[in-house]
Amino acid sequence: MTILFSHEAALGHKTPHGHPERSERMQAVKDALGTEAFAGLDRRAPEPASLATVSLAHPEEWVRAMIEAAPAEGLVHVDSDTVLSPGTIDCVLRGVGAAVEGVDAVMRGEARNAFSAMRPPGHHAERTRAMGFCLFNNAAIAARHARTVHGAERVAIVDWDVHHGNGSQDIFWADPSVLFCSTHQMPLYPGTGAVSESGDHDTIVNAPLKPGADGERFREAFTSRILPRLKDFRPDLIIISAGFDAHWRDPLANLMLEAEDFGWATRQVMEAAEQSCGGRIVSVLEGGYDLRGLAESTAAHVSALMEA
Image (cartoon, rainbow, N blue to C red; front, side, top):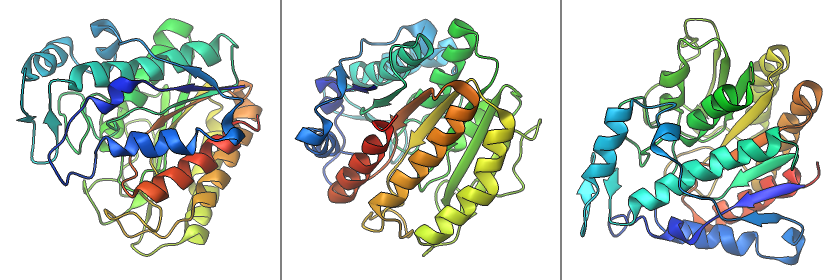
C-alpha cells in the first residue's frame, strides 16, 4: 500500500506573480493523482510538525527566527527567490509533518511506501540558510526523525531533482549514518554537486549530468554511480527527494528526461529497498515547474510506488 500525504495548506504559501514555485503546482499534482488509476492510494492529511521536529536538521533559534519572520500580510523576501507569506508557516510545517508521518507509517509497517505531495521543496535548505524556494529541509528532517524516533541505523536519500540538493549535502556532510546520492544538471544553480564532493565519510555521492543529457545518460549515471553505493550502504530506510524538473518540458533547466525515466528510477530504488529494508521508502516532492511535465512525472512515480 502507498500513502499519499497532501493538504490544502499547500495552496496557502504565496509567491510573487510569475514565480515558478506557485500554488498551481499542487493543483496539477492533485489532478494527476485524482484519476481512477490512483483510487487505491491511502490519502492522509498531515499535521503541522513541531518545532522540535524541524530542529532535528536546523538549529532551534534559526527555526524560530524563520517562523517569526513570516508576515501578517504581503510577502517577505528571504532572498531573491525565496519568500514568506501569511500562509507559509502552516504550509511548510505540514510539509515537514507529511515527511515525518510518512516515516512513521512505513517504519511501523502500515504501508510499504509513502509520497508527500506538498510544497515548497526543501532540498536547498541548509542548516541555517533558506534558499532556492526552500525553507525547511523535509528530506533531511525525515532522515533524522527515522534515526532518532525509530532507531534506524542507516538512512539513504536519493535526490533526482535537476538542481543539486546542496542543503541535504550540507546537513549530512559529516554524518556517516546518512548516504546522500544526487543526480543533477551541472553547471546549474546552486553551483554545487561535483563528483569530488564526497563528504567527511565518503557518504556523499554526486552524479552530475551535462546540459542536454537525456534519459539514457540519466539511467547510465544512476546505474553506475548511485545504485551500487545505495545497495552497498544497505539502509534501513530510503528517502527520495523527488524533483521532476529534469523533465524535458521544464523551464528552469536543460535535461531531456521523459516521465517514464522517473518511473524507471523509482523502480530501481524500490528494488534496492527490497534488498535492504523491506521496501521502506518515503518520497517527498521537490521541484518540477512545468505543470504538464510535473503531472505526468508524478503520475509515473506514484504508479511505480503503488506496484510494491
